[in-house]
Length: 120
Image 1 (cartoon, one colour):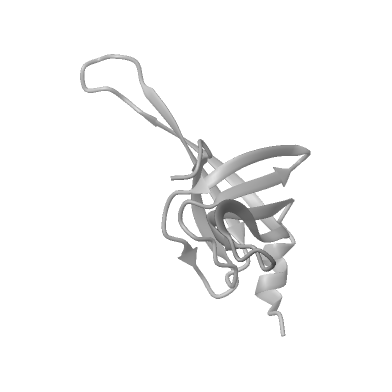
Image 2: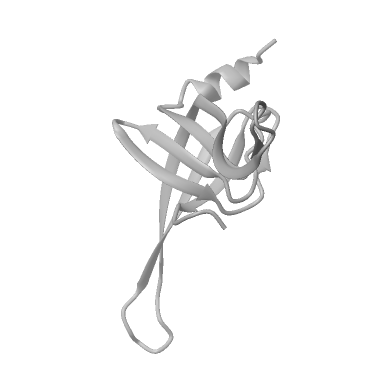
């Protein structure tokens, strides 16, 4: 049974995500093992949040601006470190990788993301 709190949180989700991993896959016919990308799950409701952080320089130089990207999704979904996470929200699709341990709550989880640049 889904709680009222979880329904309220998920009503804010505006995107969908697909999680892909890189690993060993054995062909069932040839029994040959190769490295390839596989889909762990797809079309899961989610929400991307962006937070800009500005820091001033001690040397009087220009301020540095960084951005924190956070993905909110269902708590039971396991997103391994280094996964490729493809998120479509508000008509825009971007690829990310998981950059930290998930902050898991009873009704949702938050995962900090970085732009995907390739499997590690």
